[in-house]
Image 1 (tube, rainbow, N blue to C red):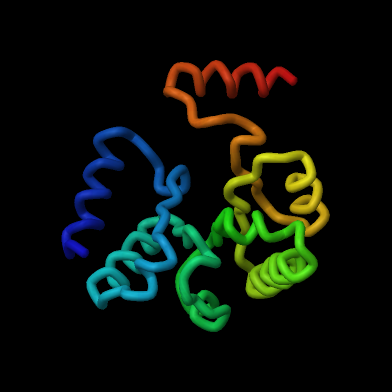
Image 2 (image 1 turned 60 degrees about the vertical axis):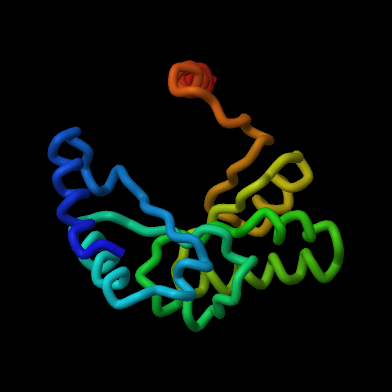
Length: 155
């Protein structure tokens, strides 16, 4: 909500040598419901600088597909609560249609909170772009994360 946010991020980017295409910024669904003019200007400026944005926690707030379609977002992160309901007929249908709608408006999808092989299988069947959760790993300290990635890269 600070008008100087893009400049602060530009300074950090230059200080640490990080390219904007290496960073994806997340905004929660509830934040986007109350977005101010300054926030929208910041988002647009950061996109102009090369950053991408994800909408986090989709499915727990009140965002409509029409609203999501008009926001400058690359990724939509489907909240774990939608995945938890997938093992009911209605829950599966809601998730399946959500995935289809988001893909039809060229949004990439991340399913959060994946903990079982069954959930992974369902999401792959639905052609979800990214799957995130304890099924793959619990959160790790930086040094363990580097080891984890190195081991998985050798597989």
